[in-house]
Figure 1 (cartoon, rainbow, N blue to C red):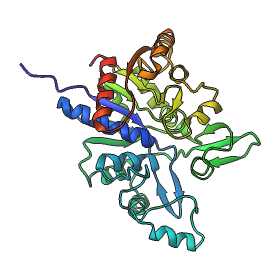
Figure 2: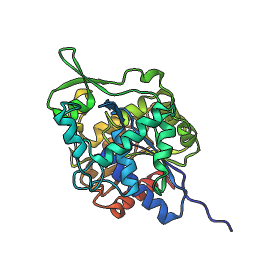
Figure 3: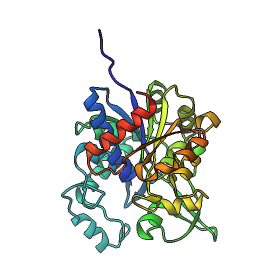
Length: 325
């Protein structure tokens, strides 16, 4: 008797939360001797800075899977230095509040050089991924540039990274936009991976600025809605509070309550044209299960603190159980 190879898994992810979650997915699949997951990463917070192309969410996931991330600062490469950044600041170049580490800058220079030579972002990421045994296939959501802009009440706009990193989301936004995203095409392989999956997981990433841009790529959103796979989202809200970052500010700007129920409603049930079959919420929010079920979304409860890869793998197993795999 031939044993099942295990579930084929696609993860939609962005940010530090998404990077941590992918480590748990990799560990859960390793325990099952299952195929490697495909991770579709947010590129909405990409930017050009000092002549180089930065992909912060892509790199956070890349470094995490490679065991190269700085887990103390929560971003960038472990053991990095900042000599080049200091020199850029001395020249008055770049953004004084946006640090580029030397090792991290090496990644950006390699990426930019390959882009200038005519490679697509997908091809560049394939080259970057080949350096380390990642245990997953990492794809950008699109090869098109669809950077996130933050809109304010006075009609002005700001790049997401300036609003997030410099101002720490203290300026109240009224909306977020990704110019050109309506015409953006999914990265090669992304739609096929979703179509062939047994489970599609929405990582506990920021629903608005990490998962939002991925799902705003028209063909990607439709692929998630139409896949035969079960679609399970994992709440990034525990006990009614965001785990990290300023996701609550983003949710408020688009009129969504900062709660596991509010975000579940934001994504919606697939039976009603939304995205979710099931929604994994924290043990602290178990009382919200009934409200989620009323939305037509199956509710599942588990500990959601991603303290390490093992604990996160157990969380992923709870998501698999909710998907019936």
